[in-house]
Length: 86
Image (cartoon, rainbow, N blue to C red; front, side, top):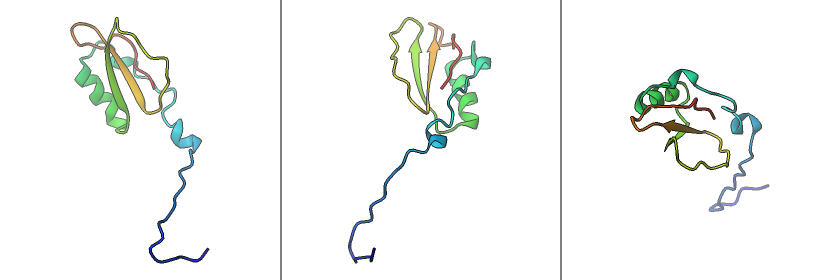
């Protein structure tokens, strides 16, 4: 296809299973009992592109699974009470 000056370049993003499920199944049991900021620091050390959601232990949780997303369940003292996983 000849290149036309001023024509916008179209790029299609294709989901690559190695990218989408890059961290599928990862968990961090050793952060249970730590403060939230320490737990985030440990998790983010090897996986900087993960996003965090912090919820109290009695909050409603969504059933939607998201890639690159970790939910930290905390108690009233801001300590992680459940093993976070992707």
